[in-house]
Image (tube, rainbow, N blue to C red):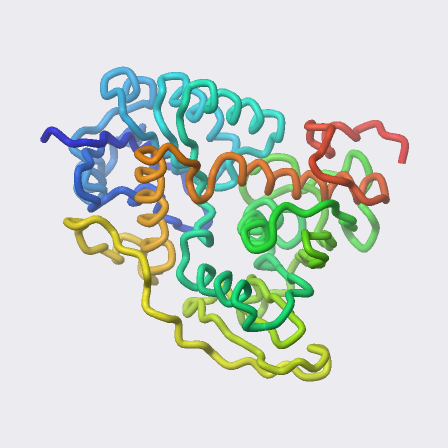
Length: 383
C-alpha cells in the first residue's frame, strides 16, 4: 500500500487506566492512511493490529520512529508523564502529533514542545474533543447568534467522583476549561480556593491520586475566572458528590436564557428560555441538534463503535475521527489544528493559575510569568 499518510500509533495496551477514550482508533478507517503500531505488550498483538487497521507492529517507539518515519504520531496514554518524551522524539524527526490530554503537567515543558514544534514546522494537536463535538459546536453557534442574549457567566464542573478536587481538575477539568477558552477566549485572571479536609491548601500538600498524573492537591477546587467581554467563569470540583446523575458539564447563562450540557451517555444540549434569575427559575428543555454540517473525506469507512467497550460512546469515536481528520487538514492547509499545542498551554496555565491563586490568596493574571508548577515552586513559600 502506497499511502499518502503514514500514521504511527503509540499505545501500551498493558497499561491499565480509568476510562477508555480510544485515541488509538482516531485514524482507523480514514482513506489514504497507513497505520503502524508501537506497543510493548505482545499479548493479543495480532487482534489489536486488526482492530486498529495497522499493517505492522513494533515493540517500542524508537524502533517505530526509526524504521517507519511516520508523518503523524498518535500518543495514546492517558498519563501526562508519558507524553513529553514521545512528543519531543517525534517532533525532532519532523513528525506531526496527535496527543491525548492533558498534553503535560509541566507548563515549562509545554512551552518547550511548542517552541520545538514551531522550529521544526510541525503541528501538535491535543485531544480536547469538545472542540470537535457537534453538541458544543452547536452551543458556540447559538451563543454567537444571541439565542441566550448577552453571555454573562460560564459554569463548569468536573466529574466530582472519588477523584473530586485536584485530580478531577487535571483529568477532566482540562476539558471543561478548554470549553471555556473555546467559547470566550483566554481569561484575564483567576481567583481560586483549593482546600483539603475543609482547610485551604498550603505548601507541601500533595494528593495521592488514583493514577500517576503529576502534582495535585486538594479535595475541593473552586475557581473564578474573568473571561473577555465581562463573562465571569466558575470551575468547581468537590470529592464524592457524584452519587447519582452525572454532574460533569457546562452551563452558560445569558441575559435571555441559558444553555447546558452534561457528560452523560446522551450528551444532550438543553436550553432554558427564561430571562429570570436562574436561581429562582431554570426550566430546561432538550434541543434537537441541527444536521451535522461537516463531511469526512469520501472513502472513510464506517466506525466500529464496538471497539469502544461494552457501553460504546459515539462521542469519543466520532470526535477522535474528526480530530484526526482536522489534523491532516491543518497540515495540508498550514494552519493550527482546531485544538492546538497553544490551546493546551492555555488550559495548563489555567490549572497552574488555580493553584498559584490559592497558595498566595490573591488573583493571578494571565499569561503566567512564572512557568514552574506552583505546587513545586511554593514548597517553601511565604504566604
